[in-house]
Image 1 (cartoon, one colour):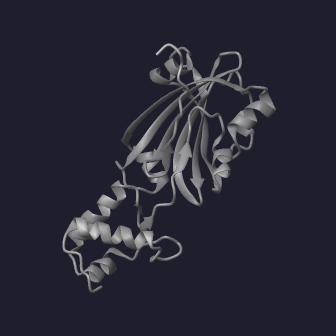
Image 2 (spheres, helix red, strand yellow):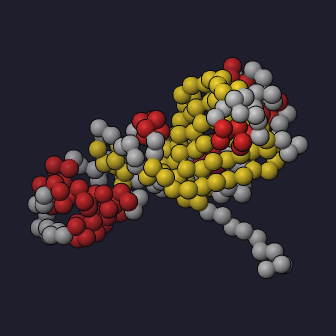
Image 3 (cartoon, helix red, strand yellow):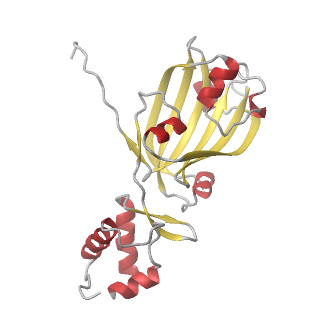
Length: 241
């Protein structure tokens, strides 16, 4: 390049502009750090700082042992809408699929017992799944189910929507739901499954679901890649404020 960036800020702007112009490969993979260092006549340390800043902005993401990639558009997620993962992706023109990691019957820890409104040590079903958008793993999820309502569910096809499975097989429909959302760092298991570095930033969502009879039926623990999700909520004003 003739116009060689000399600072991290300039390097960030130049890389972002090249990404926006579609200059890089069709699969979204950036050249290696060594190649980029040579192109910009800069040190690996300066380049890595610039790449880190672009990653923090959600422009690019790093996949362990594969390099840097351009981030695809974020999935828009409105918690007030009860659309399930696959339908939500399809509505936005995205391709979604789900992989089951494993299933188990285990005793609940105290925090999960409280969320499911069950005595400590009660056994529950756990389903661990990895969810993909356009071929990229974006969500690691642990589902904890009250087995009273879902006999035999662990033998079902759990790659499909649990929302649909609940309705079709058990006549259970979602009612009230409680969400807790906070930024956090990925635990080891989630990071490994999402193929990112341990301790990478994520959005952690805890969701406790009730059915049409107001019974707590399950609790979901969701770890989202922070660059994969856009929370978009529109609230309707009331007359009391």
